[in-house]
Image (cartoon, rainbow, N blue to C red):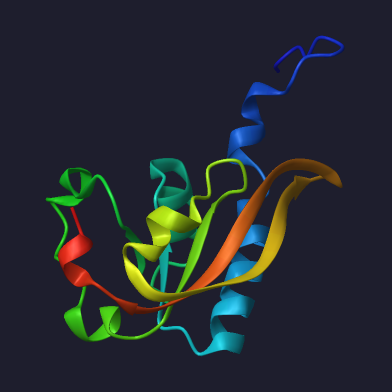
Length: 135
């Protein structure tokens, strides 16, 4: 068991609340007609890809060298709209606009555990992805 000191953040919180967050992201994806989920953070990519495996492709738009061991993202899927998910504090609409012709803010989602907020994520809808931006 991990001893948690008063006033300190639980170091295991980074592993919690992903199933529920992924379900909310998937709900938004289905509601918008998007075919895939775009990310720009290794942890977010990994957790969403794990939770949504065999359902929805999750593609990290940057740091593609991390994924050389995997097949390239399906070019047909990349032509569809995407739901982009990033920590609120790291979301950069300008950066996102360099990769998609159209970007629309959809929502903010909060990852929680036992009712305690752990992190808030910005969610955007991106249309007409420039696949040459995958790097």
